[in-house]
Amino acid sequence: MDFPRMIKIRQVFPSLSLANLKEEINKLLLESKLSNKLNPGMRVGITAGSRGISNIDLILREIAAYIRLLGATPVLIAAMGSHGGGSPAGQRSLLASLGITEETIGAELLCSVDCTEIGRAFYGEVYLNRAALDCQAIIVVNRIKPHTSFHGDHESGLIKMLAVGMGGPAGAASLHRCEPHLLSRAVAEGGKLVMDACPVVLGIAVLEDAYEQTRKLAAVEPEDFFAAERDLLCEARGFLPGLPVENIDILVVDQIGKNFSGTGMDTNVIGRLRIQGVPEPDRPKIKRIVVLDSASEAHGNAYGIGLADFTTERLAGKLNRNSIYLNALTSTFVQRAMVPMTLASDREALAAALKSLGAIKPAEARIIRIHNTLHLSEMLVSENLYREIAGSSSIERLGPPEELLFTPTGDLVPF
Image 1 (cartoon, rainbow, N blue to C red):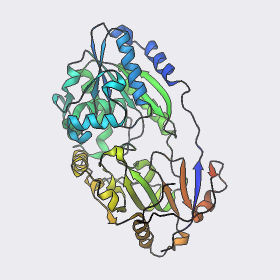
Image 2: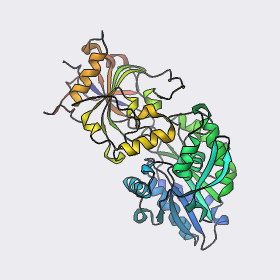
Image 3: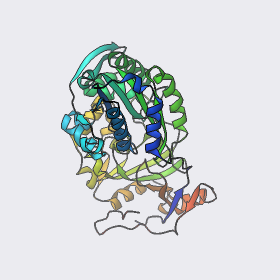
Image 4: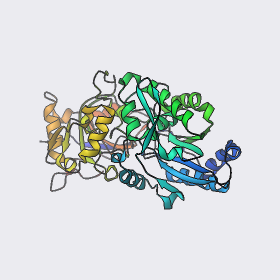
């Protein structure tokens, strides 16, 4: 089959990253009320989540250093719900892949799935990691951004870190038993119960720009968590990158992985949820999605592969089904774990996707190829699609139309 020629482009987003991140962190810590709340000898827990947050190692390291400066003892608490395969070893391995270790941060790392019930919300039991109960103070650190499965006042952020991250596998499973449209309410109610049960003294909220660089840091006092997070979430929505057009015949995604999104591919980017009973987003409208591979950082957890229509044997051979199934059963969104039509190579997967379009001729297909759904600056677009965006001030053309290049085994050459 003949494939359409592709043009490399760059989307130009506002670059809003902080100039001196280390200085900003220390400024926030000094201006917070932390020095009035921590006493020498106190054991202070710092949450460490499973998301690939830009500069998270630097952020955690500076927080730990400030705690030591006050004479207290910092400890890292693995706070990731059921991620990391729901095991201490899996948590430790996942955090190490993010650059978070005892050596890099300068604090003991506590990995555990041992949780205790601390109350009941409308959806069921609320749990808390026992390691948090052994601390005299807790600092919650997380990125604020729109969630990939639900929307509301509280999505991905400080409150969810409390309700789900610090609840361990049991807490995550309990919260996800509620209906999808109630998840934001569940996060808020569960988070409030956790705050009441453990000594939260500060939150550090991280916002990123479209280039995945740290755009803003905010030190949030516990009494302001709910109001501040609502405002920060609205602000974060404005930084989200996206695809350059809304109508696409085929989206080719080089890599899927939890280091890019909790769902492997960001549902806000691809316009697919695959949650039974929940309507699909109105846009973007993508007819076919082809996923070529799983990122090494994902350790075989390709949860979200069910959002695609086609994949490859290369990816299928890397699947850690235990981790994928644990995520799917915990969230209850089982369609996201279903492996799509699997072809021997990238060439065959793309050919199958084109063939499935029916009357659309390959040369006329509107195709976009991206590295992953997190990094959307540079991509390849088909000639037919490029004509639509050629005049945009936010699009830079980086080269002439070129044929897709494949290896002898039929895999696409990286771009």
